[in-house]
Image (cartoon, rainbow over all chains, first blue to last red; front, side, top):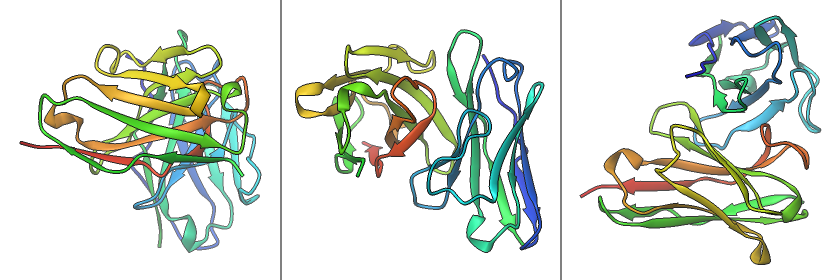
Amino acid sequence: SYELTQPPSVSVSPGQTARITCSGDALPKQYAYWYQQKPGQAPVLVIYKDSERPSGIPERFSGSSSGTTVTLTISGVQAEDEADYYCQSADSSGTVVFGGGTKLTVL
Amino acid sequence: EVQLVQSGAEVKKPGESLKISCKGSGYSFTSYWIGWVRQMPGKGLEWMGIIYPGDSDTRYSPSFQGQVTISADKSISTAYLQWSSLKASDTAMYYCARGVYSSSSEGLRYWGQGTLVTVSS
């Protein structure tokens, strides 16, 4: 079955830039989506269609795509950005999957 | 304001049936896909399936095909997730969420608050 691979954890100091990657064979042909989830809360969509930002999401969140890897970049990380981040996409048949998630720690 | 309000927490025994709900408001219910996502305790998100209430087109993840049934009643703007025979391994938080835009069956923009299902003898 199709898998999206994310690093289990990323750590960054406040004000620095965090980059979270997601790899999958179908990513060159399928859009990626990114979600932020804080403890005890429902996920929040922060990036859609690789690089689009929903209204209300801070500009410091951005997304990019290169080959089989998509990247969520958080510029000028703030303490409130500490959360789990999940990528989501589909395989060539349209079956949707989530990545395993990345815990972002703000040092 | 777009809102998805899910039914309350459930405690059930193995073998029992269950149907949880997700009521949409603040938008045209029939024009957006609604997906269901499972999150087991301490684990990541899992895509279960999605339904287009306008015509009840439903797509299941292979992992959940045959294990659950997704449906919708557009007359009351409500989507459902149901089990015919629960197992202890169905213990999880279940979220419903609406597509980003009307043709999107992938990205989920607006989320319900979640329904905690506990299955224990």
